[in-house]
Image (cartoon, rainbow, N blue to C red; front, side, top):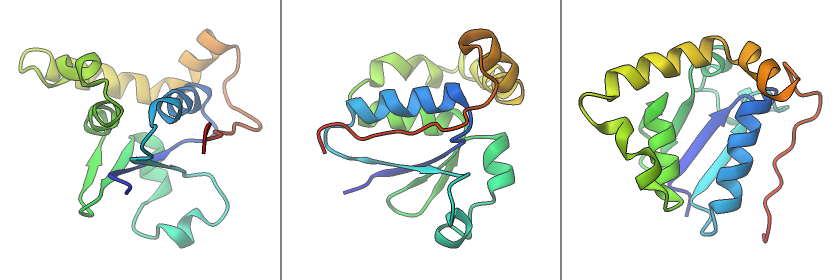
Length: 132
């Protein structure tokens, strides 16, 4: 059963890289990955504004509640058994700083992607579920 749906930018090399990593670790298929740039996205998810979802990561819990930004990241990594990797994101002293860092990253992810991967955008980024 899907416990979290993540709405990600399938044209962002860094975003796709993180989703691939999550996918490999998601042995119990708790996470559904939805590319906001995919054909038919707006028809399947009319309640998700792809423009807003491109600015800040969107997620949806199994109960229908929408979550955003680092809350999505925290939930995703916790679901694949890596809560300890992201636990500091919830610590009172670190949470405001990490949120600010996330917003900076989200705004400048194309430039950061170019620096780290050599590519601003993916022409064809694909996440393949392994062992499925």
